[in-house]
Image (cartoon, rainbow, N blue to C red; front, side):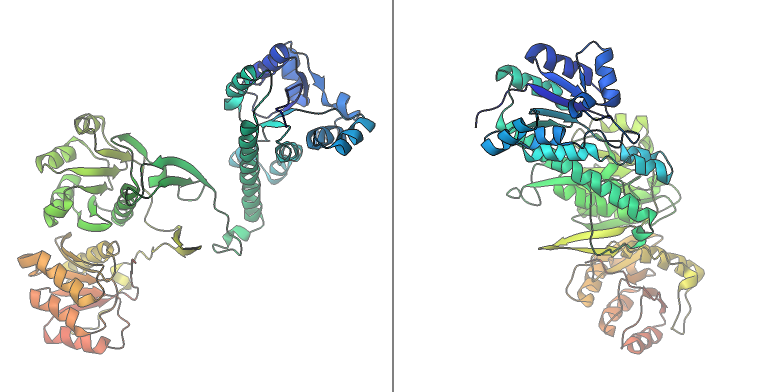
Length: 523
């Protein structure tokens, strides 16, 4: 089937950006008849472009406050008739239905109406009915009808028509049709989500049918490895989007990679656990340095000291604005970083970092407390959903089963270690001293090996330090590794059938042990 020339165009838009100029070009350059509705018709007519009101086509007035105007056979027959089907064309001729070759429609601004705080009745009135119906009819018949939803595409459409003697190409019409179904799907999803909220059903975090609205933020050069294609999608309009990584501003540096996103997310999630100034350094999804201190410079320096070798080439997160003093400390260590994320960067800090053009700097504009959102994780053929790990324990919530009670200083240190341990892959063992990590072991098939790794990394710093275990000790062997290294207090969930055995081991070695009642597995 040859590409049909655009002779008759139906225009009805909420966003009137560029619509008058588009209609003028269609009418003056290509001799197209412009049919339009309501305010769109008025705008086009006032600009001196000939326009046919929709009621002259339907022979029926717009009615019911504009609710009924395009829902008519004279409109939908002209959109849906298959031009190469003799029966369709004969029926159209019998009923005086003229073909419509292009539809230019965008929908009532339902989402903006909701965001404005409008009442229920106003939101209902801003649910578009005729618009989606016309879009779907035209898109279904894309072999003959071009359907335009985005003002940004007007110029490209006109350019193609100029090259094709007033016609659009099938390839373009098919792409425009796809855009229609994506648009109406998104529109209906927004309405469904709002309605669920109005009826109280949105409170169900795990509904029978789950709809996630995602928009492609960027294509990535590759995924985890160069042979894997990848892209990053941003969730639209969800509670917690503010100050999230997905909506962070990138000030400089190369485009974020797949692995960068994973590492920065891990670091940003971890640093938000702390209320005091804190720095978290992550390498390959594993924290290699965590510290909170009275100021950000000290927090950075001590986090870096934990494992300078691993910190090189990692990513960093701060829970306070980064100033020139922090950048100077990073430069003094000659530390190469892939990315740095913080609530803000001072102008001087950005100027200093401009000499490191490859380093990615991201600011979120603020910081949300850790947790509170539903997390999603893909498996082959499905999606796992869970509450984020947001228990936010305090020392008052802990119990002490050992003979020796921890000192107040040890309790504060244990709480720091417990928060830091949440970000380590299970089986996680973390040793800390003076609110900085000195040894981290995780991701091992058994807990005793994680303890050995943490102790080896801590070395002499394990003497007088405390340790955290993300889950209970199934045997005393892992605990004994920590005790023999000089750890004075341990925090763990408890709950093992061998708890008494581990408690006895602690009492034998005069070590204080704290039970939290919660575990923090991070698979």
